[in-house]
Length: 356
Image (cartoon, rainbow, N blue to C red; front, side, top):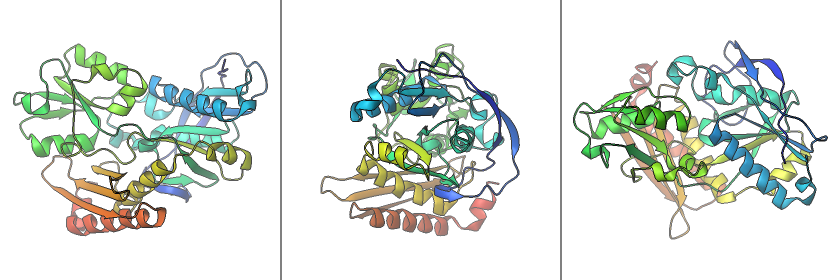
């Protein structure tokens, strides 16, 4: 059994998520935000306290991390050795506004990062696509679990694909990346803000609020809800979010014991692919109003193939590029960086100014 305990604290809120997986001091003013941690009894002093959001998907990822740690280290298999601490983030609390209007995806990680830094937790489990590209000073992200399927799922009760939806159909999505690619290919459709956890979005769809929605297949599979997918969108039809399908685990940079535990779980192919994609994002320095997509993977020849996309939210402008090279950290980071510079030059400075 894993115990879950409760604390309550106040933490500041990250203003911008435009950063890479390396330390950086917060440069923007902070907004005070409450952090709620749900709880249960603690059987004994835990060897590892895992911090996570409280959504069903976040908990599934925390449980996957817990199970892998137990399997890899016998001392962690004991009763109460691993504790899961649920931290409610501002991104979970404010659901009636687009993420871009309340600060972007960093809202799903900032309070958890602060709990890590102040010693409330020992490791933090994140969906990598929610992690700002710069980590706060004093933390490191040395581990990615094996990546799930990166594709998006199309879900509808009335159509089998985006192409089958009648003109004017409403598609629910909180993702500007999805919105821009949908409108680029199907300008007659309409995309409306659609937030909440996976179960909430499926409920809204069944109640007829929208005619269709798109969700990450990785999340559906981890929640054992993949049967809800009407069809799957190919990479050509919908390029995924940076690091989609990847789980990242962070710890304090001076905590050698946690780094040792996490290094035993790291999946190197995933770590390198995520590094490539996040370097692309970092170069573009996109704010939370910038649709950006990327995918790096090992091809049949063992090399890295990379695709990147930069778009306007309304889909009127879409810039794409590809790269190929050795599947090694230095080469893949260089590919991501070069691809980012290419699209930044193609779009021009006026493109980013228009998205502020």
